[in-house]
Image (cartoon, rainbow, N blue to C red):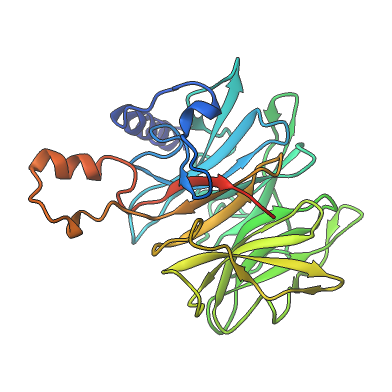
Length: 320
């Protein structure tokens, strides 16, 4: 296990150096923000030639977690990275101390700031293989993370549980595989520190299409999620918003062309101050549509840069 851990750490360190991964200053220096539309977030820092997913910030904005995946379509492996803001600058991302040996993804800082939820393929019994993702959590206190804790069989099943998002009430929203068309959105209510059996969020959200990767507002007034195969979609998968009216959710509304594109958009989250939406998009610079003949160096530059068709993190002003 120690040898495997060393290999994984060495691999990611090598990849980051080969990317020209560097600290270019504070968060505001990583992005030239257009007035309305989404743009790459932290180009060369948070968004690189690698496969980046699901960013989350601590409530005080001083810590950031995000996921990097390998590029294998047959054996996808995810690892959670951490960076901290010190003296106005973000530190060089490193593998989170609780995410090394197993495939881990979808980190989410609880609004209280003292707990991080994430998904993992780590087994409940050491030595036994596990292929599906379950939801786990770690406590964060005095600058340290505790050992991961499984959320239990009330929440987790033999299918995938994905993208946990937690409200101020402690209720956890997530997506899980169904037996029909893919994934549905569920909520597990927190009663005195214990999660109850998940409840389907209803037909207004869960349709004959596919819904997953839901972010819940801290006060549970709205939910943002990815919908696939919707009639008003701009492409592969779009981000939608639904509002809570009493005990019901409104029909999802497409967030529009300034957020969505012809490519897959997923992993939405809102900044702690409520000013920005962050999400992952698989946009590329479409070298196959260029009218000019590219040189070898030009083509390799595209492949070794963001917007190469892998996941990148985007940011846009959020107007709820």
